[in-house]
Length: 477
Image (cartoon, rainbow, N blue to C red):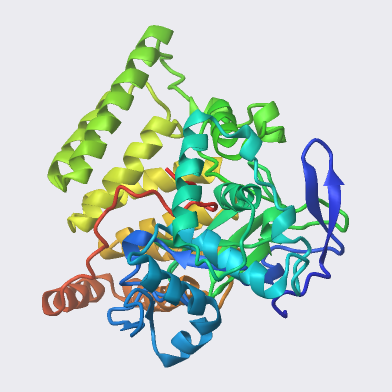
C-alpha cells in the first residue's frame, strides 16, 4: 500500500470520545489499514550518538554532521534525506551553543515544517498539527511549570530570523507532543529510541481491548488489524499495556491522556478476577491475601533496586523466595506471580541458567495466554522469548511449538517484512530441522547438540534492563 494513502479510513464523531477514525471497508487480521511517515521526529537525548537521526536504526558506527557535530547518520543517503529537516536545526544548535532536550528539538522541527508548508493539511494527512489535541487546559501545576520552562528554553533556541510564533501556539505544540508523541523503536522493535508526531495516528482512539495495533517499521508506522473489522467500525489501539487492573488502567489513562476510559473491559472489570486470582482449594483468607499482596509489592521494590545495581543473582534469589511464598495463595494468572515469572525467566536466561528459566517461562506464557488478546504484540514477544529459552535449554519440542506460536502472532502484529519476524522465521526453520532430527534419533540429537555447544558459545541473551517494553506513546516521565 502507498504510504499516506488514507482511503481506508474516515474521520467521524465517536460517542463520548470526540473525533475518531472508522473503517471504510472490511479488514481481516494482519491487514495494514494505513501507513504513515512522521510529520516530525527526533532521537532521544540519551541515544543521539548511537541511532541514525533519519531512519532511527541503531548502528555501531555513524557519520556525524560536520557542521553542528550533533546529528548522526548511517551514511550519505540518510544524511542527504535529513537535510531539509536538519538545515534549520544545524544552524540553530551552532547559534545556541548547545543541544536542547528532545521535547524542544521536536517542537522546533514541527514549527520549521509549519514555517515551510503553512498550517493547513499536508499531503496524506487527515488532520493538521494545529487541530491535534493539546490538553494544555488539563495540565496540573507540575506540568504547567514544566511547560513554562520548555517554552522559555525554546524561545532562547529559536532563531530570530525564523518565523515568530505566539506563546499560545508554542504551548499548543508542546501540548500536542505531550499527548500525541509516538514512541519510535529501533529496527528490531526492542528498544525505544525516539519520539515522533503522526497526525493520522493521533486520531485513533484508545480501547483496552483494541481491534488494531501500531508498529514502527522501516521509517513508518503501520496501523494493522488484529482480527475482522467491519465496514463502519471504529478503529482503536491500546495506549497502555493491558496487564493492569481496570481501575489502575483508568487512573493511568486519566493521568497521562486526560480521559476516562469507558471501554467494555474497564466498565465491566473484565479479567480483573483473573488478575487478582487466588488458589481455590483451600481458599486463603482475605487477611492472608492482603499480606501476600504487600509482601509481593515490597519484594518487587527490592528486585527493582537489585536489578538497577546489576545484582542479578540477588534478583533470582528474591524471585524464587517470593514465588515460593505465593504458591499456596495466588493462582497462576495473578499479576504479582506473572511479574515475578517474567523477571526471573529473563534474568536466568541472561545468566545462561536455561533449564530453570524454561520452567518459569512456560508458566509465564500459560498465564499470559489466558489474559492477553490472542494477537497481542506483547504476548507474541513474550512467547518468542520463552521459546528461545526452552530451545536453549534443550526442550526442542516446547521451544519449537512456542516459536511457531510467536511467529503466527508477529505475522499479524509486525508483518512478514519486520526484522524481528524475519529472525523468528529463521528460528522456526532451524528448530523444525532440529525437531525432525530429535524425533528420528533422540540420543544422536543430544550428542550433536552437546558437541555444537562445546564448539560454539550459546547466544547470550541481552542484559535485562529495568526499562519496560517500548510503550506506544511517549510520555515525559
